[in-house]
Every structure is written in C-alpha cells, then in structure tokens.
Length: 263
Image (cartoon, rainbow, N blue to C red; front, side):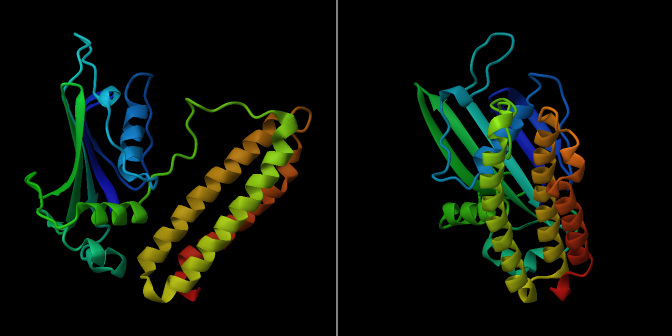
C-alpha cells in the first residue's frame, strides 16, 4: 500500500491541488508555490503525535485577489495497493472495511479531513469515503485512522524554515547523544523485523528494509554534511566512521532486501 493521490482545497497556501504520487516523489518549486503547505497537510493527517490535529482560523486559505479567507477546506489522501490482492495481507486486515474497488484491479482507501469556519468557530471532521465521495458508515473512524498512522506515519526529519546552523564546538556532544539514540532505535527496528519475518511476505519485508535504508541515508548524509562544514577538518569526512558505516550498512541492507526470508 502506498499514498497514490493527494487532493487539497482551501488549506493555507494552497487554493486547489491534485497531485499524483509514486513510490519516490521529489517536490521542486519556487517560494510560495505551496510545498510547505503540502508537507504540513501530510503531517497533520499522518503524524503519530497525539491528539489528532484540530484546524484553526489560520489554516484556511487566503484568496490572492481579495485576501479574503475561504470558509471550507479539505484534504483527501488516496492509498492504493502495491499489488493486486495485497489488501489481504495480515497487516491490512484491520482496514478491511475501508477498501474500495477501483476501475482497475487495485483497491483503494479514501481518507478525508475537512473543516468549516463559521462565526470564528472551526469544526473539524474526519471520515473515509467511497469512490464517489460518499462517507462510509463506520462504527469508529478513529481506530482506522490510528491504524493507518501506525502503518504509514509522516515524520518531518528536518524543516528548513526552522533549521539553524550547528556550532562546530557543540558537534561532538550532539553527535554522541544522537548516535546512541539512533543506534538503540535501529536495533529495535532490526529485532522487530527479524521477529516478525515468518509472518511477513517478501514484499512487506522489502518495504521495511527500503524504508530503513532511506532513513539511514538521510541520517548519514546529514552527519557527513556537518563534518564537511567543520573548520580545518574537511578531510575527516572521507575517513570518518560515518562513511565507512554507511557503506557497510548499504551492503548489509541490500543483502536483506535481495534475500529477506533468510533473516
């Protein structure tokens, strides 16, 4: 399952947007084109932080011509199967009530969060839809929302709007603290994958390792960038444990991806 489509209207810097995604999508655009608003929308809907986000006055889009705020906003996420019948996998069984037949051979889940502004009062609604946009009648939307967030959380690793340069003198202390935490989390993830491997399909294990590899790639790229920025020590980056560790991790992870069932 992957996020196939994002539909946004009336949210922050976006008046109307319909965006089709694939497994790897890069956003490139000038300032004020809505990149941050798109990432904010994904974070609001899929962030593991609790409680669930409630929209406020500043979330509604300002029209360019009149600078008036719209009174309604909505964000729709469409999740699609990676392969036909993959919705029958064990990890998706709790979402069985949400799957909708499509015009092709794949099933989809339609998740909508909307808000209405009236007399300075903002009401937020979360629901799931059929392919015609009608709300599904479910006993408890929140349990399905939590399950989707658990399976596909959005984690903002770094936001350039709030980032600050790291002082060279604080690098070593910060690095050691981050390394210990990261190593512990990586160990937990590895053990969870090993323990669960008999219950997972080849595709599910491969997805897990690809996600882990992407996170590792971000982490080591970030640390190497800091090493390059350290004064008079640019040669450290080439010989650093980060570089050696990343090369070893890539080789090890690739071996798991190729033959995941040998875990």
